[in-house]
Amino acid sequence: MKKLLLSSIAFVFLLSSCGSKTKGELVGVQGKKWYPEKPYGMELIPRGSFIMGKSEEDQAKVLNAPTKTVTVRSFYMDDTEITNSEYRQFVEWVKDSIVRTRLAILADELGIGPEEGGIGEYAFRDADTTRASVYDKYMLDNYSGMGETGYEGRALNKDEDLIWDTSEYPDEYYTEIMDSIYIPEEESYNGQRSIDVTKLKYKYTWMDIEAAARAAKKGKGSRKDFIRTEELEIYPDTTVWIKDFEYSYNEPMHNDYFWHDAYSDYPVVGVSWQQAQAFCNWRTKFKNDDQKSRGRQFVNKFRLPTEAEWEYAARGGIEGGTYPWGGPYVISDTGCFMANFKPQRGDYAADMALYTVEAKSYEPNDFNLYNMAGNVSEWTNSSYDPSAYEYVSTMNPNGGDQANNRKVIRGGSWKDVAYFLQVSTRDYEYADSARSYIGFRTVQDYMGEEDSTQ
Image 1 (cartoon, one colour):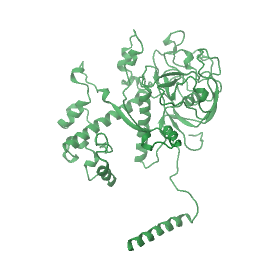
Image 2: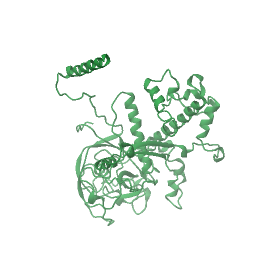
Image 3: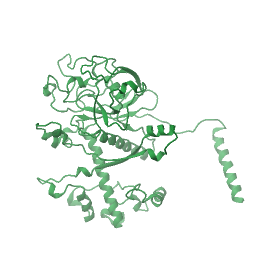
Image 4: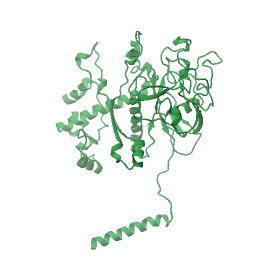
């Protein structure tokens, strides 16, 4: 009875103390003030409406882009296509995480902790109980062993630098783990042994909000029914430079294009739609991990643009333009080509480029976006349906059918004729396909009032 009385007194005190701060007024929950931050390397695309589709003659007679007035909300968009250097950051992060995870698991199996040195330096952080928080201990006691491997949720020790020089490996256990991520000795040649890229897999989960909302409308399903898990190899398919062109010598591009520093600022290619989605998820996680460490609120997710967002951004605010610079010509008044494509019936080099060019080449459009025409075609989030314009909404339209494996690509590429460079031209590729002429750029929803200074 005494315990119940004390609880009642505490509850009344809690209510009265809350009321004393607000003086009994409805003031709302006071959260942190939100300051919109312009993402690095992105441009703000202000909200607006435009006529989506082909206002000019449809020369190809595909009849899949009838004009339709639509409105899109504000968003940020990368000012260039994602470059080899930027995608390599993703690959390096995945490689680093895989090595650290394998080292930590082996250390755990051997019962070796940080105090014993060697591989123990890379043990899970909770292995050092002096550093584990109350939360870490709770999670280890209550959730360890509940995932596929039993190691889900355990934090890696990222304070210790990985050692890549074989002469400096600390012990035989470390050597065993490092050896496991390289191609077998019998598959190496010319004294070079490289990382087995098939082992560079990225695993993530996401929630299918649209499917969950539709199911909730019918009173069906629970939250866990709409959580999807994806795991895929994320290294670009460098063989596309050979597979895309029969009877053509493109071996130098296969050998050097992705990893060599000479191509760091060129757009990444050989990436499927699924890999582009994985990159978006990683970029969001990478940013929000930093936000969390700084005690800041999470940012909106990075994602692929919808087809409508891409076309709106490509137009750069020019109504009825044929190309990002307006049009209708692909040659400037000084006689220079305005983009990297296949001009003059196949003279690839006439525009000063044989393959791709650096991501910041040619003049940007009026939204300060580079190469929205030519260089590489770009994945969008939308699924391709010839009749999509007939039924998609006029507000933030998107044909995002998960069951449709055909995904819209836009902008044309270095190997395309001028027709595919037009801002309204639609094309598609299958989500699991990778090409030497398809890349991507990401967008992020804008939160807050419009601010032209952002």
